[in-house]
Image: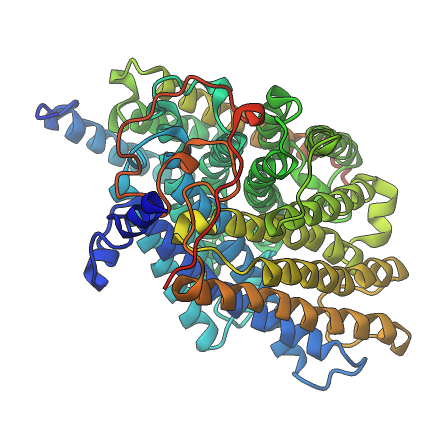
Length: 95
Length: 544
């Protein structure tokens, strides 16, 4: 375990990218894009989450099945949360 | 006799090192389990104290013991302490911590230091919670419902939220440790189909802890952000949606009930075959029903929100899914009873708790089906019917399982036997006290008594007096084991390695076990619960 799995250079690059994307998210919030505001924010957030999971959490560099199962389960349960919540939000009657 | 004397004097995890430092810096899973045992017992009595004050206030219809605001704080802190600081860590962090490595034939958990870290996180959270309670408390209900919690409550919402946030990480780390340990550290021959069902139950519990707890953590952070920085997430006046809070809160908090009950089911599954002297009926079904409960438990959360304003379509879906959870739960109940059928049953203390669990859990589960039905739910939402229902699960189920497990494994944990007749008496008192406390609440709720009020119409008094009387009996039932467990540590008979004639690797090592659990690494070449080939219980001997 003496060799770090991810080089310091990559870590710093990812960190800077995350900071820039946070700035972009904040900046876009001040521009009125209509419904696109939410979509843009979500796309950026998803990309940032991917960077964290794949590189900071080393998922990209692992071949371990257990790690993959955990990641897939986590995404599956997130989809359950979103999907079943949307079953409520998309079918509410507007009074 | 000579072997027994040797066993009593040999080095074990309790006498290997002495001094406070050897406990506070230990990475031994068995010692950490005892640290958890002390801490959760402390919080159990704090939560119990609040419960007794609540019952005392409800002895009379008038609000005469405490003021309304104080009453709100009492039921809030009773709930928060009991759920987050007692029930969730109870079986996993105490019995699970102690037994998971022993049962699978490992020296320790996969990450011993993370295990200690999880206890320290729990303590930090507990100190924060105590500080919150001593400096004014919180009055939102344990559920933190918005917009009350973010915009109106003048109490210590942020502090309580942060305490629970931190305790969540303790829970996540325990779950993580169990998952990795169960995958990676099983002894040779300990295949998935030979695992004790206690392990399967803890595996399922760990999945919920890992996947559910982050959601409540994020949700509480959002509550804190909205309260402190006035972001519009849940507050409708700022464009937020209060129901979003409820969706996120119950996405964790409904499965959290399974964090409490699944380990208790695991305990009962160990106790029943042992005291019926029979192999468990339907091993695979019991194992898979644990996983089934863990997964289905994530699909039912909005049944807590049927009258909150969710769409009728969503309510129908969640109602149907809620019925589904009953299937794996029923499989377990049927399998336990089928195991007992034609068994050679002994009515020892752990078995009495297991009987209590099966009966009370069934009552709690069946009334849960009433609540899953949309029409009945509208009638009994936020009444004492709901209070009775979930106490049958969380106290009648989880606490009975915890006490049953504590009695079953106490000889292994302490190396001493507790007094059996007092044990049986306490189990009986707990069962009677429990039913007297909570059964009247089903009737009260059905008649329309709402929860969370400190006054009520005089016609409800008789049932409330019964309930309060029951709670004092229950308190005696809970105090008794604490007293005789402590007594037994000095005066109890010396426990043999396997006092119950039970199956499982934990009974093949000395009581109490050595620091690294086994003198030689075990190899498993037999099936689980092979009671046809297990020797009879060993006799305890008098100790000094």
